[in-house]
Image (tube, rainbow, N blue to C red; front, side, top):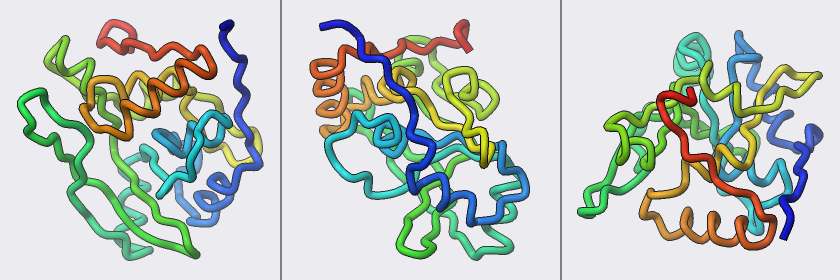
Length: 178
């Protein structure tokens, strides 16, 4: 199967939902994980939330002005079964659940190199920007690269299905490629 040429759907409702939050740094948002796959039309299920990475200024704004909370979330699991947890900025607005981070995580990169954080500026090189809102969306290859090696069943199913159906190959992210 040849690789499918994916294009983001910039009219996807996630862009409007994030835009309506009134973030002070609108162009310092990268939508990622399942919502990004949905924006590219390669996800066979409805995402449960809007995942993304945001700047420190946007985190402060959401927590101080919009009442978003800090929560711990599992982002991966080590081979020994221990969960990898990170702090997230979490909130709900008009039926949308937001799960926003200061950085993204690649368990695969961590397993190979001992470092797995992927900062906002680094994510943008693997993303497309909405010309209207300025919000970025991660490309499917990048998202799959963050899902490999998580040991989470849903992530493994997403990777397998998307590779089989669309021929999209996950990026093996590395510190050198960032």
